[in-house]
Image (cartoon, rainbow, N blue to C red; front, top):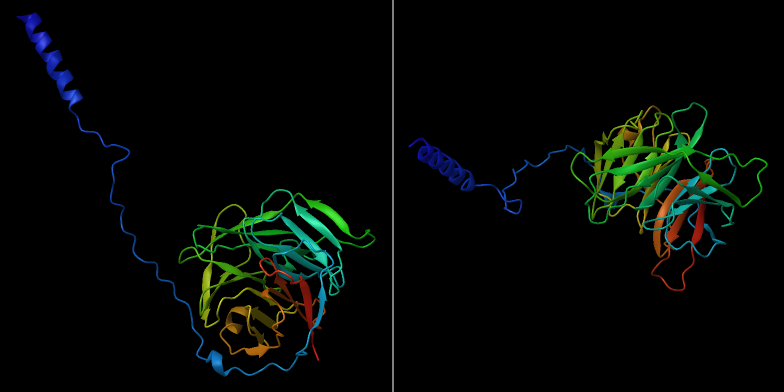
Length: 326
């Protein structure tokens, strides 16, 4: 009796264990539906079709071709603050993690190789102050995202090299780079415009979208150890922004596309964020670039530069154009 009862209990327990229902890792499950994220942008009231023409700069630029013929996807331009006349440019997605040194004549003045980061899609470059007082920094925007799929974007920051006494072309490895990880508050999006406020060290990004551009800001100090969520500033009726810049004195802003450039002159005491809400003017652009990408003020305020990508445009040359202030 006891032996039979024991065998019955063992058989019963084994049968129960075998018939338990488990969830297959391949079983479809219904994900919780996340509510849509609402982010409030201020939209200026002016009409983009009624803007005045800016007459502060020459309408016809001085244009020179780059002496280097291997740079086909130039996507930004920024003027050095410590090396007179030097401009920083770069290629965009999938190219080497390098910054190239040139000037208004297009001369080859050197190459900086960032050894600790890659080039997923560098889209703009800027120069401005940073964490160490009195030091000028180069900022590179890893913000390209044509399919709007990346949860984070990155800004790379490192001190400008001092070229005093150096032999040109200057070639150097940049082994130490600050990595600033940013996230949009309203989901991934494509962008090609980076701007640094020289007064506050705030980082501004303008999205590249059809018929409008969203302006975001990451206030200083930006974390190097955690992701910073960008804050909304304004939504402009600007089609497919490809580049922008803030003047070294913080009183002027440029925002460009492949077709036109907008220019803001800020009234005394106006912040950059507030400035984006004021009415701009249409600045000179000669429409001389097959795929105009970059725009940047000269370091001495004497004008602004533009450059262009030429990949996919047989027979076209990579150029630097300079619009001199009158």
